[in-house]
Length: 283
Length: 307
Image (tube, rainbow over all chains, first blue to last red; front, side):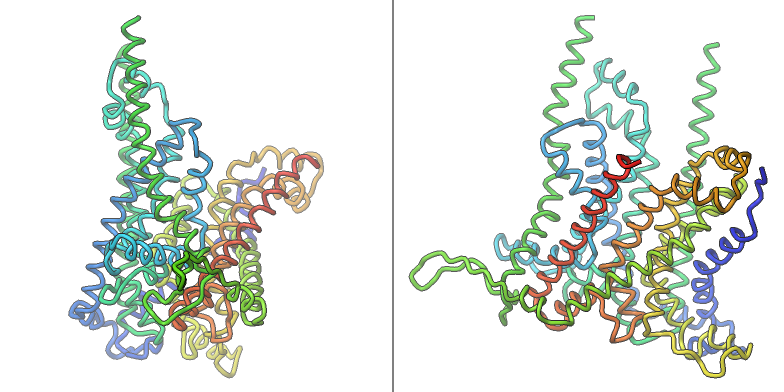
């Protein structure tokens, strides 16, 4: 049978990838444009780095980036811990009371429209403040809690997929040999599911770093994250410094994702090799 | 042997105690920050606005005779039902989400097919290229289209130079831009489930069809399409559901006339500070989506029986 792709499929592939990437590439190209009118190429003074220089001296942008980074890192760590626990319960605990509700609670945040999540989180924070006086006002804490709630669902899915494919007899052997369950988890389970935990952390970080809608509902005066700052600028139209900022963000994320992906792949290959060597030795 | 089994028994009993803790922490978290908030939204949708902070009339209050009173207002729901703006916004959200899903499917299916049938060493690169945009900022990817679609942007410039048009096209702040933004943003969600469905498909089935004299196009509709229907459904859901409640794309690319329910909710909340009405809109949107998913599951459950 003909294994080559038909011209139609090839055309659609090229069109699809062009559709996905041309806007991003043009955004990067225009970030080096000297003209303030973003879409008009000033061929005399371009390419220039002046928008990058301007960006680095913009205190507002740096402050927002710092807040976003702090929230994203805290959120990623918290939601990875909660999400890993949740995934472990779903895969290892079999049937328990309230399981179907738990399944619903760990998947629903992914499909719930962001405007609803944001609104409901804000209302619960307001109600909690009235009843127990915490959280006082809204800012980094409330943003982090809100992000953790929806990111934990994504971490759960990623870790769950890995947990359900791994060989349970390893854990059972350790339990048989008298290891405590907590030790089994940290010595056996965690190293095996580590790649998915790392991917989950990265995913949670990026989701939080990018989030605009939920953040807008639960942030307070004085706490503006990077997406909020970008959004307020975007509403006024295109501006060259956003292009520069976008370029930096896109490049960092791309390098981070590819880097982590390659590192995990290499680790996987090494483990497979080691397992093969271990199998060969006794013979 | 006996000591081994008692150790095992102790291990599991410890597990029973630890189990509560391991399960309790994420469970409690999700109840407190996901379930309770939804219940509160539902409750507040029966309240009325008040000039205070928070701007909500409490549902439960002490009356003049010191009797605990529970007051529920249906006014938000009757208001939404009577005001054509809200009905139109709901209808338009469904329309935009539906059209975007179909467009994403038409573009995504051939792409997923191409990736799944590409040479093996190409496949992971192409796969990564589809996933990568998902990791780069949603807001910035939508923003990228503002420059492209603007009056003096690259698309208009090229079309004018080629002489295809004589006046710059107005593309920004139109429904066209919203559809474009939707398909662009959600295309990876469509391609991923389709890819895994097509990759699982056994090519020998198509060879068998060809051997029996079936033309490729007919084989596609009789073999490939039905066997990948689960992937199609998953992809469509992943595009349709977030599209219905979308806020950013209509706000950035759409015009003032692009009514979508996510945008209406946002404006009620931030611009009009009417938290109860925004809650009522949220409840209706939630019911709409839950109803949609339930109907779909029913249809799906019935399908294998009829075959």
